[in-house]
Image (spheres, rainbow, N blue to C red):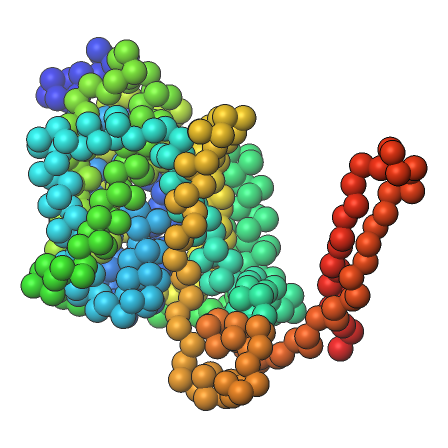
Amino acid sequence: MLERVFHLEENKTTIRREFLAGLTTFMTMAYVVVVNPRILSEAGMPVDGVLFATCISAAIATLIMGLWANYPIALAPGMSLNAYFTYSIVLGRGVPWQTALGVVFLSGLLFLLLTLTNVREQIVNGIPNCLKFGTAAGIGLFIAFIGLRNANIIVANPATFVGLGKVSDPRVLLAAGGLILIAILMARRISSAILMGIVVITLAGIPLGLSHWPAHFFSLPHPSGTFLKLDLRAATKLGLAELIFVFFFVDLFDNVGTLVGVCEEGGFLRDGKLPRASRALLADAFGTMFGALTGTSTVTSYIESAAGVAAGARTGLGNVVIAALFLVAMFCAPLVAAIPAYATAPALILVGALMCGAVARVKWNDFSEAFPPSSPWWPLPSPSASPPASASASSPSPSSSSAPAAAAKSAPHLGPQRTLPPPLRLPRLRIVNPLPPDRQIIRLPVVAQFPRAP
């Protein structure tokens, strides 16, 4: 039966190899079971419900990819789209998370319609590769910024908007140590490097009182907090149409880029095209819609699937193993709730850094290729929330406005504010070339500014 469904001999693989490859892929992406509920919980969503939605949507989408498309590519809620869901839509724009789930569902419905009509493939083929690479890098910068902020490595600064946090903060030290640990493990090609790093950082914080030991390790799933809580009526408002487009735009590049990259490594491409591409694209469409119904952000393909392909995965049989492991992880809600934000921050930083690697494929010596990739970086949303009312109340009065004071009003208030002294403006200087007049080349007036010592 397995041979008839997955064509093991045709793809020159075995059941044992597919099982081990599926286990490898799950271990490399198991951090999503921890990180996704942690991120979405900041939007006010219950951790238990998000954990259930994360695991069940990942299992369903991965099964569809394996059984229907027969590709060893796992799917789960995307690490870029969950950050955009939480920090830009819910916290940044004040949209209720129930309405945001409705937006995710509508974007998944749009994925489905465009995939069935082959419009999605035509859109992807018509977009320049340089823009795809730039979009991936811009999202990577956004994720890494969130990780640095969650670790308190960077904090809000009224003068420069972003400043360096306190090095003496134990959370900063643990996050920095975890970042180095995970980087070393990844350099040694240990498949579960990110998950191991998160566990080590959490355990190290228990003696310091920064994290706690869970009362119990397993519990029954509690999906009622997010199951069928989406608000489709509010999501259909005209003002939210742009959000639907953003989810569609990001997932369009993310999913197709991952498919092409993993399938190229596995040798699945034929003349540069992916056989059964429509079936593979439908997997994330169904996964996104199912995830929104159960309570999570957009589901997409994971680049960590390349680890399974490198371990020998050539069919969708490995996806069956991955889906089964996700279903088992559904019962680990107490463990997930015990993991603090600073422990998952290194995972976000490293995942964001890896996504930035796509920019290396841009032809920077050609300006027509170099300019478009930078355009997705300009409108990147800030993951910081707006300052509280007390911050504006304590800010300087309009009569004493200055550049630093204006920056203090618009920057998030995460610490004590300070006002920098005005810069010292030096007199205008004229630099004259000492050569004879007939050989002088340039006369350049210069205005220099230096900060006055406080």
